[in-house]
Length: 140
Image (cartoon, rainbow, N blue to C red):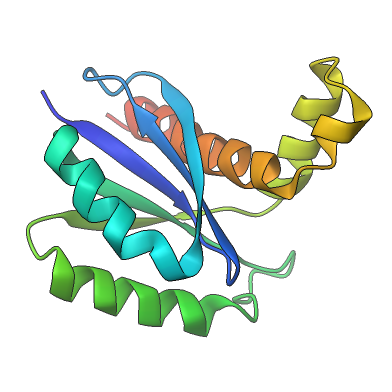
């Protein structure tokens, strides 16, 4: 089987998560500086069998797209050109950063580590991917 990759896109950093081969669980992978993302993905796709990429779709509470959506669309177009064999899907990521922050706080992690924004990015990517997996399992 193949794995799925979760992406929490940001202008400075991109949080990444990955599933197990059965696509049941999502795990934090890493955070990559945005300008280095395609080189990182080139390397990752050589090491891991990934078939699907889930990219967060940030929306405001009202359901309207967030301001970063135009940058995400540009990223997706570049991704599809560089990696045309991957299925790309979007998943609503409302509140994932807040959920990630709460999860990190309740983990008992020290204040200094909790302030690391890259940790929030990869935990957010994990929440996006796990929610996607849960939603798609229940809709079968």
